[in-house]
Image 1: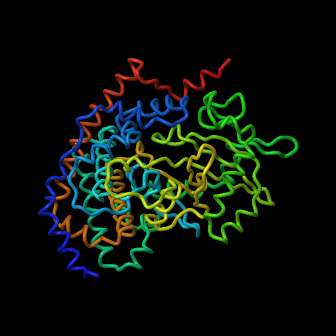
Image 2: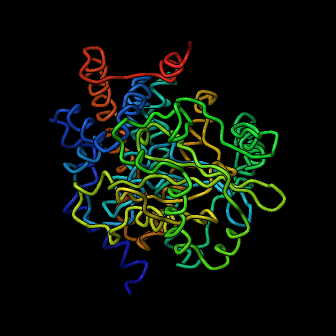
Image 3: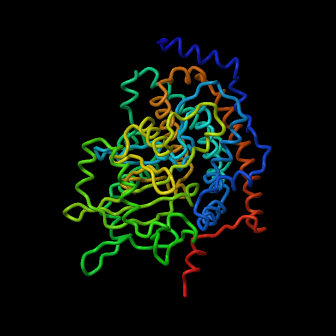
Length: 469
């Protein structure tokens, strides 16, 4: 195995083939964005594609969140140092947040792995940096903050990789960013208050707290998930938003669907977790719409309870082919997309959901399984002042650096390439500026397509109005 010094020297040598300044290039942006957006909608529930477009239409930032395929296409035309590592695949700033370890400790890190796939480490970093500039611009923080958040992401990423390279494999593997650490590192009273509020919110986001919000109980004590269009609906009721010719409608009742999903899923769990799961019985299964980019993919929520009627909500989320798959040379080692997501998450997170696993459903669709909501918290960007957004950029850069170091074992090589100066930060700030401008052009094109009727965009309010007498 190469020494730390050798690996860093090898990374530094890679600058000859791929100068750090070349990373300012925005990539393959001479393309039709609408064709790629329409391609990414294929295979989704048709009536919900309009909701996906409605959410993307809100702002250039929500458009960016929902168009990961566009940037994957564009990144294929950018230079990289030639090192492929396990990637998150969609590392925008809203795919980071707080979540509970199996020991019920609250930690911070990457928390979405739908697009996990091997690829150039630069791609995750570029998507994250660009997301901060686009969000800062969308929230009108000003040009100086736009630059500062980009530099904070890159510098924190580099510092973390340097630290991990010096820690050794076990310390890197066990390392995590706890919210207690964040409390101690908060540099302003405003940032400190945001961390405290996130911790308090996470403590409240339990299955027991969710139960009365989305579940009805009849006189006999039977529990059912409450329909709340377009967010939650049952497959086989009048409230269903599935298309009339949807193949899932051939399954007349939810129980066979649930039984089929659970059969393979149980086998992907550790024996002790299968034992824990056996202590719950199921009451109901419903469709749940989630996110921006995921809208229209199939996501089911199951309500289970133990003998004391304490709830457990399991989420079965469809795992489609990664948006990176067509644009990178490395192939995923997993044929099952649910397994691809789960193994990527286990490899990159410091600790993963107790019930994380995968399964297959009707029509050969792939799913991964996890708990719904349990102690999960995301940034409320609209409440962030300048200093808090900068602090959040720093912590996301740290989290991505830890994820890449843990998953790849190549922290020394990457940190050697980036170096200790500002050259990489300069290039990626330029990249973020160029890509933000491209994103705005694509967003304007998308807006025009929605106005002209080429694409149908509908909001939650539109769906609610449809159901009003």
